[in-house]
Structure formats: structure tokens, C-alpha cells
Amino acid sequence: MTELSGRARVQADADARAVTLEFVQRGPASSLEEAAENLGVAPREIVKTLVAKAKLTQSASEHSYVVALIPGDKQVDWAKLRRLAGMKKMSMTAPEEAVAATGYHPGTITPFGARTPEGQTWPIYADASISGRIAMGAGEQDLNLFVEADELFAAFDVVVGDIGK
Image (cartoon, rainbow, N blue to C red; front, side, top):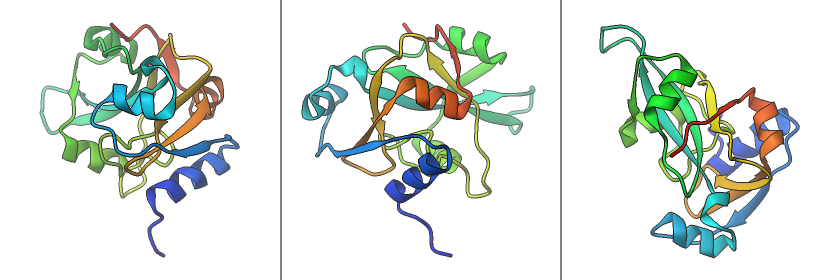
């Protein structure tokens, strides 16, 4: 079996979850603000998909990952995310760890089709300010997708709370 491209993997997962996506070629962008301008949206309407490493025990080898969805005009408040996720320690992953955890490179990460090579998926937490039609990574460089936030949250059983600053 051949591996699907990022966009095809995203679409296959969205179809399986009965979620409607719209793909848009954004073109190259060197910042979130430039990406928002290319898409014709405000930076807050682009939702960043971040991968965090959560330490489960005192042993550094025992960890899990969580996915955080945060509007483009905010940053993750790690203390708030740790409380919401019930974790004592959490930190942003290195780019290679994000690829290993999701199969996508930073800047292309989306919950749709995000999994390890073994098929492992991770819990998703979203900032409560996310609503309406949002843009996010679509599994490939220079490509974004648009989706209704409520539809995304329901499809993934996203835990919503105040995780931004």
C-alpha cells in the first residue's frame, strides 16, 4: 500500500469523520501574518496546531503527546494547558518530534490524519476563543484548509478551555 500525500490523508480522514473541508493554495508565507494576508483572513482566524510532549512519570522516556489548537494571534499558556490536560509537565516538541507524532511537518500540522507510523493519535485541546470558520494547516506546504470549528471539535472530541494568552 502506498502512503497518501498530506492532502489526500487529510481528506480521507475528514471524509471518514463526515467533516467538510475547503482546501486553499495559500502560496509561500514567511510568517503567520503573511499567511493570513494571502488567505484574506485575520491572523486570529488561522488556528495553529501545536504538538506538546507531556511527561507522564519521572522517567523522561515515559511521555505522551497532546495537540493544542490556538488562534494565530495568541500563544499557548502552558500552565493552563497542563491544568486542562491534567499533566504536571509539558513542553513544546522539537520539529522532528512533531513529525514523528503526527506525520506532518510544523506549519502543515492538522488534526486530520495526524498519527504516528503505528497509527497512534493524541488528545486535542483547543482554546475557547476559537469559533466559526477557521483556517489551519492542511498536511502540505503552502496549503491551508478551512473548516467550521464546531464541526472540527465534534469530530475529534476536542477538549475546549482557556489555554491561550
